Each structure stands twice: as structure tokens, then as C-alpha cells.
Image (cartoon, rainbow over all chains, first blue to last red; front, side, top):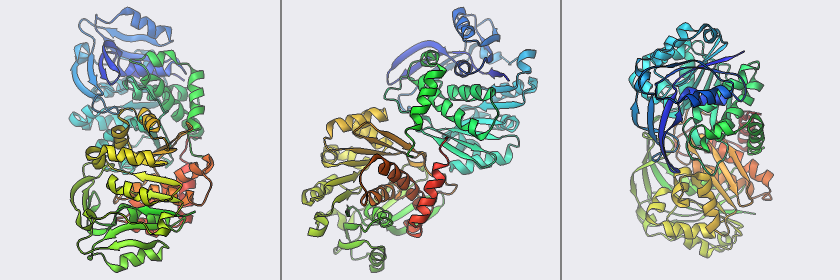
Length: 300
Length: 300
């Protein structure tokens, strides 16, 4: 019952309505792993350059995250420069400095290959496929982004066809499912992706929905926040906490409902601060308390 | 305990992913009144040209809608030409033929002036203010659109300052509340609008949220539909059914929660068909059944 996360370990430079931050801790695998670390002991598979500070790795280790498959290469750490000034729900990539991520192919240790759950955080789909080929996981989850859907759609589809859980936002769902209607897009993907059991639709500040192959449909609002400093990592945190809490529990619909609440609420802690600070500062108790508050916003 | 609706009675020409319709029955007051007619006997105040078919007025009357304040003037009925091809959540106005609406100022009969609840459906804010001045309603509800916020913002604010309930979408809320954060925008409006008790945030296909002056916050997902033929009138139907069901009931938080569900579900019937056909075909029983189905999508 354990979770391996393959994805980016990065520096982020961010422009949001609440300020600008340069080269802070970021990366899809980092957000997902910290989120999951509230509920399980995840492992990261990724790469950093020789400019990546050792204390950041130690910070991850102090959270119980296994970092032995984070390789350090000569060169620069992947650096993403993004802006939310136009649209708070969708990051605009200003620039990327690919650095050591450019030449990297994930290499899973035996321990990571044998973990039950593999999460392919947002990354080049070819790299995601390479990770799948090395893994014996019984449950594969994935995320992606519009960039890969625009330039490598067939490779993304190949990853989806190997996955059991897909995390995706509304614009990406329309692209991948090739239908403007989100329900029909989700159904279309379920039709061509034989192993896909769960599709989680991330709606940004509007919440999230979940489709199961069995025809269940669930929806949750976003936890209401009067201050969103930095939306970066919200989706990764959602997925990481969802999978973290599900890693230690049977996949019943009751537990899936609970995980959906946990995902929405964990993401709310992430976006309250720049970088992973809000996510690091929260606790399972605080997360559960917000889940109860979120339930009170249901019109029941 | 009765409801007067002031707004447009129109012809709509529509471009959606599911087809094109020319000069069908439309208008904010028409959608709102038909939606309300499932729960109360509303009245419309508006204007049509001599090209408006008598059988459309008869159709409204057959629903128990009082049409005696729909004036018929020499000239053309207001004609709105809109497209949802770019964004299903937000209509693009291709063209408007203002017709008799251009010279019209609402004139409320004594009966309409004395009804408890006045709903100012989307319309020129000067026209909304003129209606308020004639009304003795104890409860005033209003809707607006980005057009008026862009060209007549101060007039819109004057209407909001006289209103108890505001229905607004996310982009409009950001414009009116002058903050990118929806919660802060809502709070800002509550701060300068002294009588505003309830703000309903319409999130399109992502559902709706409701803020009360007392600090309550509620959220509901949209009813999941795999076919949306025409989003026109969804917001008007939401508001009309919300107010229709609240017109006959005390304004407790329990009843407000119920009205929020009713609003979301009634809108779902509207968008399933072109024009008001879906709204006309539904029944309170069907609406209540969908409310129960919607509750089942809550992760509880």
C-alpha cells in the first residue's frame, strides 16, 4: 500500500495578483508528494540540476518522502515561469528553461517499480510511458496539461489507455475527449481507455467533479477562500492528497467521496500561500476540519 | 405573496454547438416568468412590437402568467442574435435589433406596483431604476450583464443599492466587485450595497454559489447534462424559479438552500432544449426529482 510519484522537481517563477516570486520550490511531483505525505509515505522519481539546494531535498525527506530516486545531474534544474494575471484558473506559461529535465528519462528503483500505486504527475507523455513500462503498480494515475495535448496528443492517449485514474481540467477534457460537453468528453474517453475507472475533472475555483466507469458522478465546490496567493500546484496537491488518502484504504465509493473532499480541501491550503508553503503548514486535522466546513456549504 | 418580473420580451436568433434557431421566443422576463410559473403566478412588465405573435402571449397566459402589463407598440420586437460557439458559459452578442425596447420605459400597473417581490431581469439599468421607483415591493431582486457593467456601471450600482437579491455571473461579479477574487468581490458589493441580503453567483456549467449578508456561503454543482442544446435563459430560469419558490415561503436558510437546488435544476431543463421549450415541458415533480438526483452527487 504505497505511492510512487513520477514528475517534475522544479524552480518556479510566478506572477500572481498577490505578487511575484522568483525561483521558489516547485514541480508537479513535489506538490503531489507533499500533499500525499499527510496521509502516506510517498516516493518521488525525478531529476534536479546541481543548482538544486540540498536543504530542499532534506525538507522533502523530513516529510517522510523517499527521495532516493531523485537523480542529481550536471546542469540546471527545470525552471517554469508562469503567470495567473490573465486568468486565475489557468496558468499562462511565460517561459520554461528545461535544463536537466530535457535529457531525463525516469528510472525507477526496484522499490519504486513495486509500489502499488504509480502517479504520473504532469510531464512529457513519453516520459510517463517510460515510467509505466518499468512499473508493476496495480493502479496507475495520471495528470497532463494542454501543452502535451496540443503537441503530443497520441502519446497522451497512450498513457491514458494504461491508466486507471485521470486528473484533468475542463479545457484539457474538451481537447482529449474531443467534445465541448464535459460529460460527453468524459464518456468518450472512458470508451476508448479500457482500464480507466475514474476521471477527476478539476474545475479550478469552481471545484471538481468525478466520473466513475460504473456511472457514478460526484461534484464538490472549491473551499471558499478570500485570498488566493498562488494557484500553482493546486491540481498536483489535489491528486497527491486524493491518492495519498486512497493508498491506505479500499476503493469503495464512500472512500472515493471522502478522497474527493480531501483533494478539494488540500488544494485550498496550497493556493493560500506562494509555492508549497501552505501545503507544508497544514495538517490532516486541519484538512479534516475544512472538509467538515465544506460539507456545511452543501445546500442540504 | 406574488412576483412581478420586469425585463425583455424578445425574439432570439441563436448559434450553438447543437444548431441554429432563428427568431424564436426569448427575453429575460419570458424565461424568468415561465420558470417562476411552476411555483407561483408571476406577472410580466415589458414591451413587444406589432410583429409579436398573439399565440406567444396566450402561451404565457396559459401558464398562469399575468401579461396585462406587456405593452404592444408599433414597430419591431427586440431581437437578440447570440452565439455560444466560442464559450458555452458565456453568450457572445452577435447583434441586437433594439426595436420598440429602445423607447420603452416600464410602466407598472397598480397591481404590479403592489406585488411583494419585484424581479428586475436583465435590462438597461435606467429602466430597472424606473421600475423600482414605481414599486412598493418589499423585496427587490435583480440581474444584469457585462454590457451594462461596461457602459453604465454607476447606474447598475444604483440598482444594486436598492436591491435585496443580486443574481450575477463570475465575470460580472469581478467587474462589479472590482476584485479578481470572487469572495472578496462579493464582500465588497455587500459593503457598499446597504439592502443587499443575498448574492447568487451563477457559474454556468460549474454550478452556483450563494452568499448571505449573515456570512452563510452555499454552493451547488450544475445538474450534469450530456446534451446542452442552448444555454440561453439559464440564468433567467435560475432566478425566476428561485424567486418563484421563495415567493410562497419564509426566507429561512433552509428554504434558501432548497431554492438554490430548484434554481440549478430548473436551469438544467431550460438548456436541454432550444428556447423555452425545455422549461415549458418540465413540471414541479420533475424538478423535485432532479433535485434529489443532484443531492446524490454531493460527496457525502
